[in-house]
Length: 337
Ligand SMILES: Cc1cc2nc3c(=O)[nH]c(=O)nc-3n(C[C@H](O)[C@H](O)[C@H](O)COP(=O)(O)OP(=O)(O)OC[C@H]3O[C@@H](n4cnc5c(N)ncnc54)[C@H](O)[C@@H]3O)c2cc1C
Image (cartoon, rainbow, N blue to C red; front, side):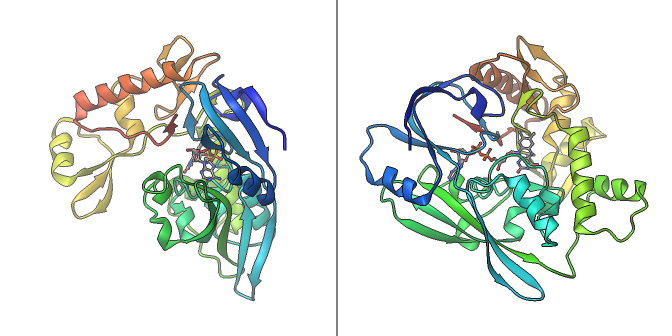
């Protein structure tokens, strides 16, 4: 285990922001992690996985732990389902593909989400009508202060929309080292409710899709819609889709007849943040190397050499204008560091 000093994190975050970590270590086993946690450190500990959900706005005067613990194990299996555990350092999409190859159903809609398995529970990753919480049984995590291992059940994780205990009372206190899922082996529950998936399957005349078909459709849609961080620095959706009251929505509808919406319950309506940002004229806008993607108003981008602060400034402008126009407070989905 080698500690590196003043390490550039440019290649460790999908925004491609060039900040430095005072100390940096790559952890490839739980034994190494326990060793690190057992030693007193004079710096704050910071966990970094795929760096696809963070905006780094400063050098980190921290001891950065990059989780690279690998391994996939089947814990239980019968005719109907499998209980499968992936270590925190596994690439999320590779794990999804592994499950699909083995005909384990439940994660196919979450294909091609960047990042690692260990960080997936942090914001309860979700896409195309499916969230991690739908199949996650439990996750194992080490408490930073005591070095003790704790198993969090699905319920204990207090999952919500892009939310969990790890973004609230347990924020910064645990390192997740593995995640366990219960997946179907037959009679898969297929979720094709998102129009784009239905359309992609219809285009190929697929009426009885397999989990492989759904994964392929999701990959195709995502590739056509979202910028590839390898080509242009970004962190996916920068803001969460806001949920507002029905009264507020009806008030807005008087002025903005075309405002899109998804009913959450009797009194709450979700509004796409991308639409709000686009209406405010931000789509495709650029200030130096920081800006808003030309096809996706919800995605902020680093065109080349923007600093985290410059991207943060763009996000603040967007927040202020959306509030002035719609009286809606946007919340960031990306972790601002
Ligand atoms: C192009 C693109 C598309 C995306 N699409 C989606 C999408 O459809 N749905 C979605 O939900 N998300 C999406 N995201 C966001 C992102 O991929 C997910 O949030 C992903 O789970 C982040 O994983 P990561 O390994 O990169 O985490 P990181 O960015 O490394 O970390 C995120 C946060 O978790 C903490 N953390 C990291 N690892 C651990 C660990 N093992 N234990 C404890 N804390 C940890 C970090 O300190 C940080 O606060 C997208 C991102 C991009 C770039």
